[in-house]
Image (tube, rainbow, N blue to C red; front, side, top):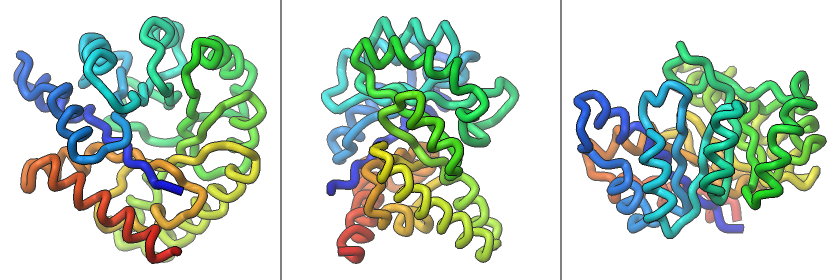
Length: 248
């Protein structure tokens, strides 16, 4: 099964917004990512619009030839925006105004009734609904129960443990990700993964046979400063494909 790469362009918009104006343009980055072989583009429209804006979403819907994965919180405002644009995929993520980045997975098990009602109109409109969750069996079971099409497993803890040199904890978290990828796949859910992945950490996750998509943003945008966006994406895809080839 092909392992897809979704490229998150949020932080191109972060750089743009630091100075105002319209440069650098996230849409240009999205088209470069397409050219480099990205299978999809991810953009997170936050409540405070700290990076991606409404105009960016409208522009992406107009220019993209690959699917748009629209990340958003489970709020009425975001639901209406998603229903207006009907992107290929909608990924529901937890969101706190004070956080620097998404800090953990969505709490589905304790909020299943509300989330089931929230995602129903999105699915009816034709969006594939993904839930961004931790590698936890209760959350996966709840995602399946409420009708999600996809789960995206939060790889942030695994990547943080690696960066901190906590290799026993890293390996334990990697094993949880591996086991829960298999569990979710056996329930019939499509399995994605992402958050914090870089050249050092991507291959063990890419090797999971049940994972069909990795979503990577901050690292690729940062690496593009040094080597350019297209070469940065090419190298990520090379590592992903090598991990699959080794597994086979």
